[in-house]
Length: 261
Image (cartoon, rainbow, N blue to C red):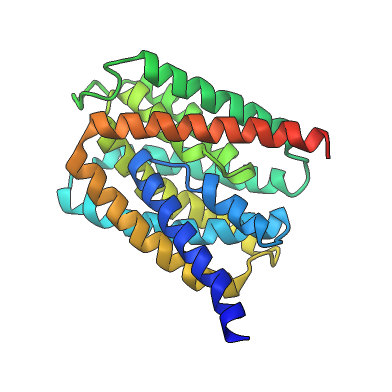
């Protein structure tokens, strides 16, 4: 009887470690593996999403340690990502409770495939980390994009960290490795923390799965972030493209399958 109880937790721990290790390399995508795994264990989507959200905060905590040691994050980007994105997360979390997500999921999948092909065809994208002028136009455009991505994060969760990474690489000319650091810390801890708190009010969190998911997220996030720092931006860019293609493709397929079930 004990073996039967331990086995699913062991599987979830391995899934959590692998998904969060990859996510820490790419700057998003943990939901590609972890969320479907929870669904396969028989959880309804709302409960799987809420539980995944809470566990994903641990990814941010684990991944933040290697990046914080480098101390290369700037206050202006931190404030912009938090102030612009968190209101979007709250609006998105409310939307998720009242509107079906099938259409939005397919649209998110197509956009994720687009950013994969955009990154692939932009050979020098994310290869530099040159300080650029923080103009009012750039701030407005950047803030609007982050609000929209925050909305998608609260509404759908899957793959939105990848959007933040590519957005701040494109708008603010950051390197992939630095952009991933902002995503993991600010989206992983703060955006997902707010989303998890909002979803927690509905009582959807499955608490007995959380300890092993959190442990796997912490360890996977820490080692993934450490590996990303060692390998550098070119390697992170390749992993980002692989993960974004996988996330986009899986979201589109998921929507198509739902039409025939």
